[in-house]
Image (cartoon, rainbow, N blue to C red; front, side, top):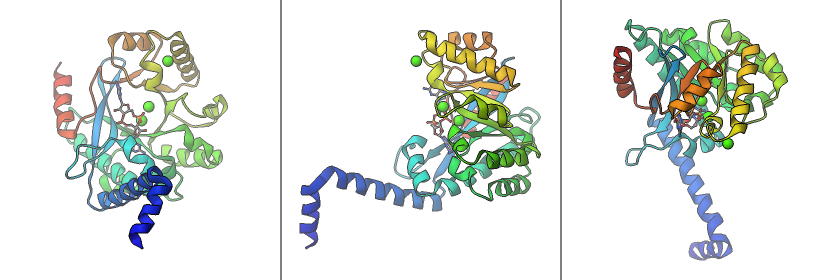
Length: 279
Ligand code: C2E
Ligand code: CA
Ligand code: CA
Ligand code: CA
């Protein structure tokens, strides 16, 4: 009966069945990955206008025992669907706070900041700000060195409540950035209402900016908007000096992309810091 059931499924719709099995097993594998701490953080440099290293964006990777490193876009959608992004997200927050503390012990790395991506699902948890405060207290990390990157999807929630949480955490020094700005549901009015520190220009506007006058126009208007609201701007996806030069000329203040460095494991990032500071 089992075999005929399977046959019927495969006659009915093999592709759908395969997709289903794939998703189930990805969900199961993620569950055991959480229990076995199979995640690591890679760090990608962020550089100030004056060429000094500001710090890093923390980017999640899944290190499954017998597999290559799995990039976040291959598992985060599933982790959002089954809720595992919440324990994964707290693990990531804990890890970067411990890293901040490790840097605080060395005068050369004392002021390095970390920006971390926070899923809307996690941010929406009623105890999010208390959990984060607990992590900050337990690790001893300096909240002023931590930036939370939120995407525009957070803003689909009750805006008053979002503002309340941001104000609560900003009161202890945590900084806030809107990620992938311009790619989502952005409206100019919410930007005015939100107590933010920074906007991030998505790499989709940077990649082709030398050939695409439309991208340049969008970048210019983001920068002028940010300027009039006194927000810092970080541009990501900078691979070429010409892209950096255009962004700098238009008033961008922080730079991130392969031009400066790819995301790397912490040991390699720390070596990078040494070379970068010596240069
Ligand atoms: P994002 O937040 O927009 O991160 C920037 C992505 O652009 C990263 O991809 C980074 O490796 C890539 N990138 C940076 N500079 C360059 C460049 O010069 N050229 C090119 N081609 N790519 C560049 P990554 O690490 O694969 O992360 C993808 C997305 O996954 C992130 O996009 C973010 O939305 C999400 N993500 C990563 N880590 C986390 C996390 O800890 N939590 C949550 N919720 N989401 C995360
Ligand atoms: Ca980001
Ligand atoms: Ca992006
Ligand atoms: Ca384009």
